[in-house]
Length: 158
Ligand SMILES: Nc1ccn([C@@H]2O[C@H](COP(=O)(O)O)[C@@H](O)[C@H]2O)c(=O)n1
Ligand SMILES: C[C@@]1(CO)OP(=O)(O)OP(=O)(O)OC[C@H]1O
Image 1: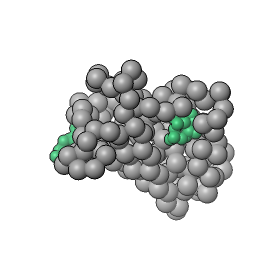
Image 2: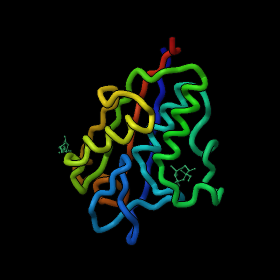
Image 3: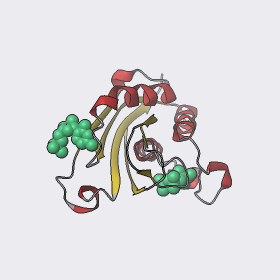
Image 4: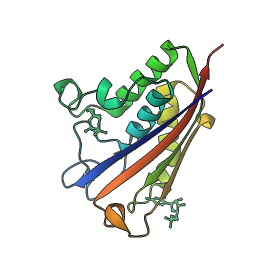
């Protein structure tokens, strides 16, 4: 068994959609990035790549490449899932945590888990998404940005 960790941070910006876990969440502002800035899917992608020692998302999807401009991060996560399975691994479980002051994401958690499970072709029961505010402290508390942490376990398939 191998463990992986991923952390991502994106800044809030006016005029952007707020997309987290592949779900568009109604809000006055969204997250800024080269891609759709899906902070949760990026943290999960990095955790999986880390578990297999395959580098990080910046290596696989450079933010200098026009190919990835405004890309749906579900496409990136699907690609990471494919790399993991090509290396002979299956995913035991993924746990993740969003640090986000606002808006409340609880109503969207099931949809996020379903998106992640679909991208990785695993059972939804293997995917957890949780959220906490930052109690108004720091950049998260000031609603300047969002942070996501993810960990995963993978194992040799078969
Ligand atoms: N963006 C968020 C943040 C939190 N939640 C949910 O609220 C609960 C309480 O958060 P605290 O930071 O006050 O502990 C938390 O356990 C989440 O279920 C949320 O939905 N969206
Ligand atoms: C996903 C990529 C590529 O479009 O862009 P961003 O949306 O800026 O995301 P980030 O988490 O900063 O790094 C990975 C990038 O390569």
